[in-house]
Picture 1 (cartoon, rainbow, N blue to C red):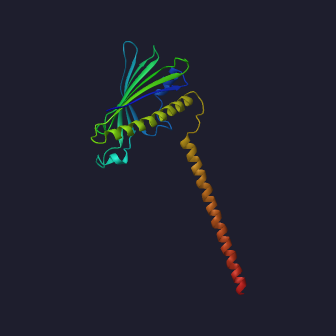
Picture 2: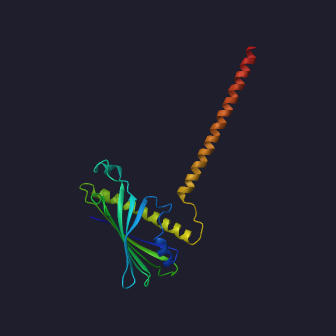
Picture 3: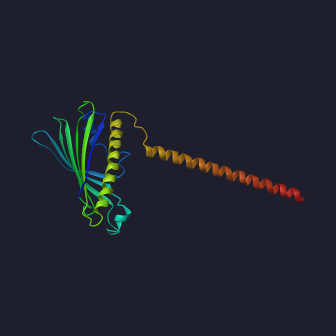
Length: 220
């Protein structure tokens, strides 16, 4: 049994802009799980299509209940192959991705088509399909459910990352990410708490000193 995903997203940027951003989208604040990217092969076909193959390395923490099926020293990184076909004449870009390790646990295959949005030629539409499968005996269904949930979460990060890079390339100041905002708020809260603690200590010290002075005066 295979879990299937079908989704559609729209980026409010032209196809040319999205095509340019596609090759520059790492790193971004939403792609911290992407560790490396390397071009393995690239060529231009006689009909002027650009073919590329890239190798991506991503972190891939397993669910705790799945860790017992693998050695303690197993790598938590997953290697992804990404094949892409760019057709500038028809303004389409098609990508195929799949993992080449941890296949015993789970295989995630994805196909994306980037094309001009039919309702607005200045926007780009992404049609995405994915297939999540597992051959792990006894828990394959649970693994597939986990894989599908993680995939959906990563799709959201991918779109946010795209929007961040597009804004950057277009000269706009990208807004702070939720993580950055939360981090700043946490740091500010820590500073406030530390200041309050120091002030409380100072007040307690002064109160103790005053009490000692009062006691001395009482016994004199």
